[in-house]
Each structure stands twice: as C-alpha cells, then as structure tokens.
Length: 75
Ligand SMILES: [Zn+2]
Image 1 (cartoon, protein in one colour):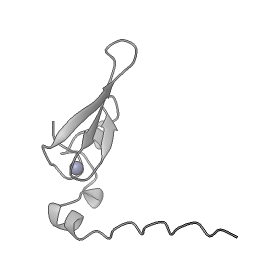
Image 2: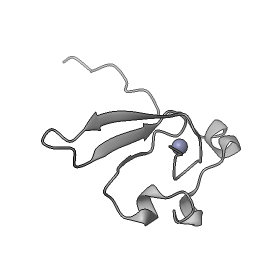
Image 3: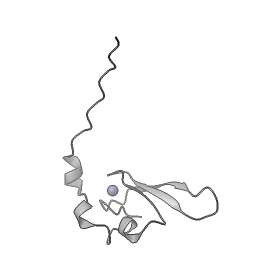
C-alpha cells in the first residue's frame, strides 16, 4: 500500500468494516492522510491523486507545528 498524498510506503491498516469484508481504512504514518478503500481513485490511487495536493518529504519537514493550547484562565 502506498500513500496517495506523499507516496510513502509506511502505511498501516487502521480498521476493517465492522460488518462483512466491505472496506478497510488506511493511514499514512508520514503525512497522516487516511482513506477508505472504497473511495474514488482520485482519493486512493497515488497516480490519480490531485498533484496540487501532493506532499513531499521536504514539504512535510518544513510544516509549522500546531500552536499549543494555552492553559485555561481561572477566574
Ligand atoms: Zn502520506
């Protein structure tokens, strides 16, 4: 399995469909993109994923960190 967004092979299956063997959900361990196996090829296929939204390893490394949530103010 290859991540459609960053093309990493470091992908894990998160879950199978609870009833039947209908779908699986996968998540990329590099860019945290996740997708269900039954979604459109534009979402699941690295070759068909919109190139405007692809991420490279260098882009991921330069991403800003999410600001921490400050402590609650107690009145
Ligand atoms: Zn990825």
